[in-house]
Image (cartoon, rainbow, N blue to C red; front, side):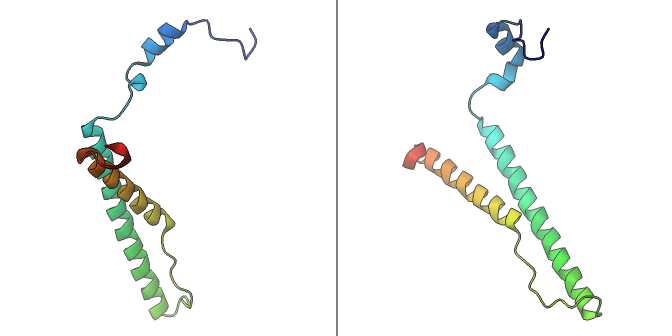
Length: 102
């Protein structure tokens, strides 16, 4: 048998075996759970970044680092906030039946 031989399982049986992975769309529960996870991640990341800034200030005050450069903003946090905004706008537009998702 060659490594690129087609599978001998018929398409119908293969899609039935997948089960829930073939469902289309997302339930309201999924949306709120995923949004909640995103919010918790944003909060956790924000607290972590504040802790890093505090540690950097402490190291600068005792002279272990120079600390001349500014602490850069977190690109991960910016992208997460943008993703949350897009999700909220999409949810509001679906509820109000306005915009492209209405």
